[in-house]
Amino acid sequence: MSVSHDKLDDQSASVIRIVIADDHAVVRSGLRLLLDAEGDFEVVAEAGDIDAARRYVRGHHPAVLVLDLNMPGGSSLEAIPAIRAEAPDTQIVVLTMQGEPAFARGALSAGALGYVLKDSADSELVEAVRRAAANETYLNPSLGAKIAREPPPGPPDDLSPREVEVLRLIALGHTNSEIGKQLYLSVRTVETHRSHIQQKLRVSSRAELVGYALQRGLINDA
Image 1 (cartoon, helix red, strand yellow):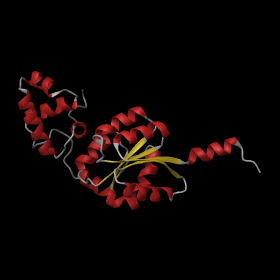
Image 2 (cartoon, rainbow, N blue to C red; image 1 turned 60 degrees about the vertical axis):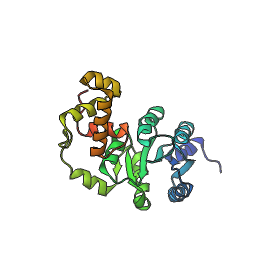
Image 3 (cartoon, rainbow, N blue to C red; image 1 turned 60 degrees about the horizontal axis):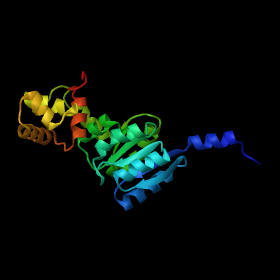
Image 4 (cartoon, helix red, strand yellow; image 1 turned 45 degrees about the vertical axis):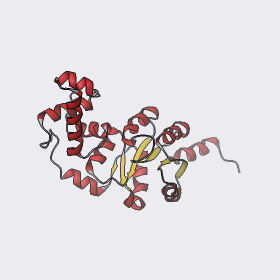
């Protein structure tokens, strides 16, 4: 008995194609076993660094990219907007050991739809992938509870007014030199402010600073 082309297309459309990006082969193997156990999931590629992840996303057009936050080849947080721009139909689920709310805020603000902790992957990753494929958000429940207990958005009390100004300009994409000219500061002073901001907020990349500024409403009107 022959199967119509329309039926084959429907079956193909129902499969959620996935790319896994993690720099540890044993982790990728475990994730593949977990995801392939779902009848409607298909892992189409595995990447060990950021460049490979971007290349496989462009080549395979998956519905979901499962992305480790700490990868060789650059910052995963900074790569998220680029991946979303290159492949707007691919949703991103971050899988990480980083349990700090700032990292979750940064990832979601950068464009990820899911944030799962590795120690909860067995119970959460499948749901996160399904939600991402349906264009819905998934956040690890313990992290969601921490974020809910945080103060409402607004300028953080532990940053000085000058540090808030510097943070806002960083988030708007200005270089240290440009910030110095606008605020009449030396580049060295701007670098010192930036270092203090990163220490206080416990973040390490520009993408995380952008995510924090967005979450706190510092650049919503920009």
